[in-house]
Amino acid sequence: MQKIVCLIVILICINTFCFAEEKQEENKKEKEYSVAVHLHPVSFILSQTITDSDIKSLALYSTIEIPYSSSFSFIIRPSLYISESDYHKMSLTAISSSGTNDFRLGTDLGIRYYANNDGNSFYVSSTVGLFRTTEEKYNTEYQEITSNSKSFFQADIMVYLGHSTILKKLNISIFFDVGFGLGTMPSSFMFSKKDHGIFDINFGVGYRF
Image (cartoon, rainbow, N blue to C red; front, side):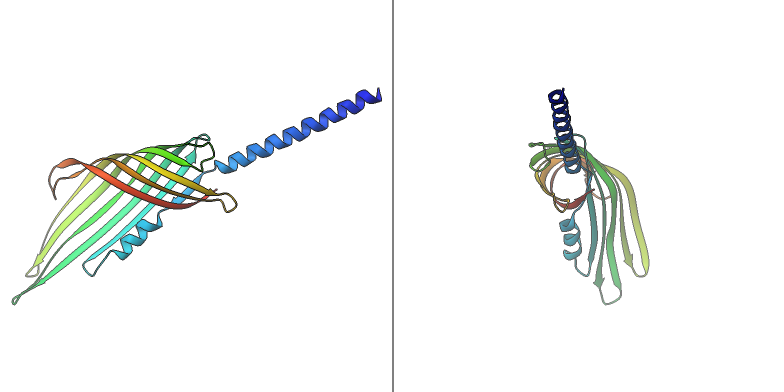
C-alpha cells in the first residue's frame, strides 16, 4: 500500500513539474511573439539633415508588428511626410519667389513571414499602401500671389526582403529590409496619374510589449 502511495506521489510530482515547464515555455513564446512598435530613426534624421535654406522636410514612419503565429505577423506602417520649398529671385525692380508645399499621410498594411519560428531571422513581407496627398504650388511676383493646389490618393504594392533581430533581455526589436514595388503618382503637377516603380529601404528600432 505504501509503495502504491509513493508511486502516486511521484507521478503527481512529475506531472506537476512537466506542466510547469510547459507553462513556462508557453509564457516565453508569448513574450517572444508580443506586439512590437518600431520607429524609423534614419528616415527622420535624413529628412532633417538633407535640407537647406530653401527646402524643409519632415518624415515620420512607424512599423507596428502584431504576431499571428510563430511564423506570420501582421504589419501596420503609418507615415507622415511634409515638405516645403521656397525659392527667391531678385531683380532690379522686384523680388519674386516660388515654391511647393507637399503633405502626405497614410499607412501600409501587410503580412510578414519569418524563415525561423522565433521571429529572429530573415523574412519576406508584402504590403499594400494608401495615402492622401496634397500638393500646392505658388508664385509671388510684384506682391501678387498665385497658387494652385490639388489633393489625391496614392496607392502602392510592395514586396520586402529583410532581417529581424530580437534582443530578448531588453525586449528590443531591430529590423532592416529592402523592398520593390509599383505605385501611382501624378505624372506632373496638376495632371493625371501614372504607374511607377518604387524602391524602398527601411531600418526600424522598437520595443516589444
